[in-house]
Length: 297
Image (cartoon, rainbow, N blue to C red; front, side, top):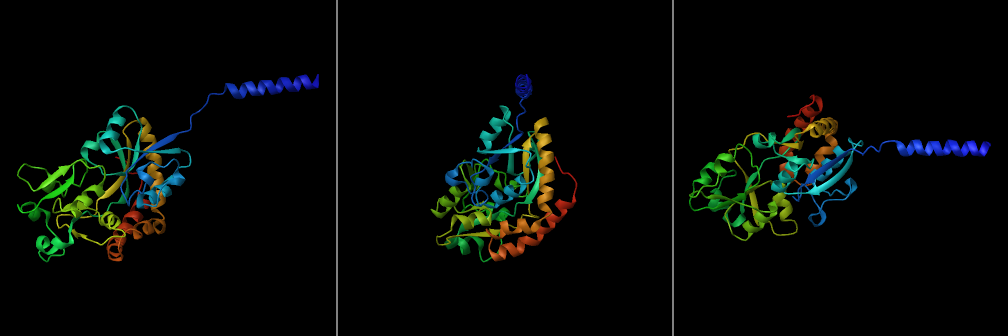
């Protein structure tokens, strides 16, 4: 009798467990960019787990943020900008750790500030430095865009910031044209081959492109630029996205409270001169971000 009752209790317990609704583990799907050295993706493929994130600047920063989000399962995909927008409209809930905020994107996504993006610079071949820069240590894109003897090339689906937009609008008679390119490094390869006179890129991307090779490309600060732009994390503008971006915002503030963990991520990919110039502004941003309340747009 005792054994029968025990078996009955066990059977009832098993039935109770099996009858409980299965609650799916909340998941964030992160869209990464194949953009060295911000992301270093082996073979250009998305990592299977957070532990397999690469050693790029944003890989390291995202790893710090994910430690603050243990309540989620994290999966990763690699989609270019146009494809990601198509997938969002089709219902795929996505977040991105490398977003620039624009009015058009605000209609589709929610944003929270993460890091200073640094300043884009004009990139040209070293052999043309004197001819194009004419002995100056910085350059005016407004003046450069008026020179009919020069030809610049930029990426068509990339946001270069409001300060530079007036000088980058493609025009039939303009000297700056836009093209579709799968990754920023493609334009640097074309520049090295002499297929245009200049492009725009971050100094750390130029440095990574030339690792182990002669430094035939150089970059110059652009005079039209003001303060360093802010890079954002973004998620779909939806009920799901609002809940997730709120948790991400809290995680970003927790990471910002530890600048000693963030600054080395920059130091690895910047020259000593570049790091010395950018570190104070970055530290101020992190301190302010850590002390501010929620910032979601």
